[in-house]
Amino acid sequence: MTPRTQTRERLLHAAAGLFRSQGYASTGLTQVLAEGGAPKGVLYFHFPGGKEQLAAEAVALAGRQLCEMITAVLAAAPDPGTGIGQVAGLFGQALLASGFREGCPVATVALDASAGSEAIRMSCEGAYGSWADALERHFRDHGVAGADARQLATFVLASFEGALLLARVQRDVAPLYAVAATLAGMVDKAVST
Amino acid sequence: MTPRTQTRERLLHAAAGLFRSQGYASTGLTQVLAEGGAPKGVLYFHFPGGKEQLAAEAVALAGRQLCEMITAVLAAAPDPGTGIGQVAGLFGQALLASGFREGCPVATVALDASAGSEAIRMSCEGAYGSWADALERHFRDHGVAGADARQLATFVLASFEGALLLARVQRDVAPLYAVAATLAGMVDKAVST
Image (tube, rainbow over all chains, first blue to last red; front, side):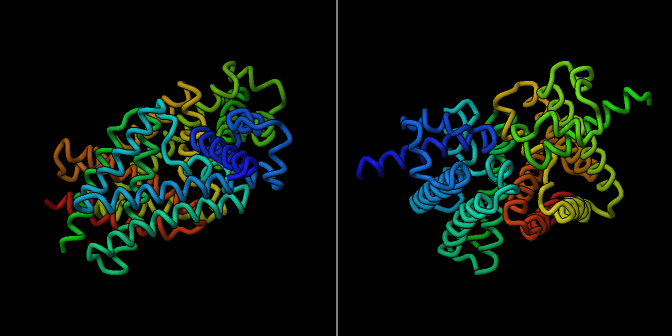
C-alpha cells in the first residue's frame, strides 16, 4: 500500500470503531483524525463526501470484516449449532474486552443515522444482507431447503442483533449466550430434518 | 394537571419521540422545546439534570407506555401466538406511519447513549426488563414453567428488537412479520406442552 492508501485505511478503521461504539451523531471528524493519526485537511482529500461518505464506507468495511469472520467460524465449526455458539463467543469476547461498548459494528449507526442519509442506510442494509447471505449459504450447505434457509438466516440474524443490544444495555453477556443457545437448538433441528 | 405539570409532560413526550427516531446525540434541547411548545429556560426548571435527566425520564416513560400496550394486547389476544402477531402488527403500523423512523422507542438511545451515561443506561435496562417481565408473566399465565418462561421472554424480546432494527434499515416490515411468525410458532408450542 502507498502511504496515501494507508492513511485512508487508517481513517476508515478509526471511523468504524468510533461509529460502532458511539454512533454517527456523537462522532466528530476531529476525533476520527486523531484516532487515525492523520493531520487535519486530509479527510476531505480521501472522503470528498465528508462524514456521510466516511460513515457509508466505514459501515461497508465493518460489514465485510464481520462477514468474513462469520463465514470462517461457521466453516470451521464441527456442526452448524456449534458454529452459532462460536459466533456468539466472539461477540461476547468483544463486548467484555470493550467494557460493553462494542456490540454489532453496524447497529448503532443503523439506528441513529440511516433515517437521515440514504447512502448510510444502503450501506447498513448491504452489511446486514451480506451476513444473512452468509448464514443462508451455510444452512443450504447443510441441507436446509431454499426458502427455509433464507427464513432461518433472517431469524438468526435478527435474534443475534437483539441479543447484542440487550447485552450492551445490561452490561452482561448472559442474554447473548441464552439467545445463542436457543438459536443453536433451532439450527441443529433445521439441518437434521 | 397544573399548567406546569402539563409543560413537563409535553416536554417528556416530545423528547421521547425525538430520541426514538434519531437517538440521543442528534437531539438538541432547542428541538425538544420547539416540539414541546415550551419557551426557552423552562427546560432546566423541569429537568435540572439537563439533557441526561430528560433522556433517562423520556426512556422510562416510553418503557412504561410500551409495557402497558404489550400487556393489554397480549391479555386481549385469543392465544399467546396470536398475541405475538398482534404486537408485531402494532410495531409494523408505527414503522409504516413514520416512514420507518419509529421502531423500538428505546433502542436508538440504548445504543448511542447508554455507554456514556449510567443514568440513561439504567433507564434503558429498566424498560427492557419491564417488557421481559410482562412477557414472562404472560407465558407463566399460560402454563410455561418458571425458568422456561423467563428464557422464552428474553428470547422473544431479543428477536423482536433485532427484527425492528432490520425493518428500519430495510425500510420494509417483512423481516418483522417473518420473525414474529416464527416466534408465534415457538410460543404456541411452549404454551401447549
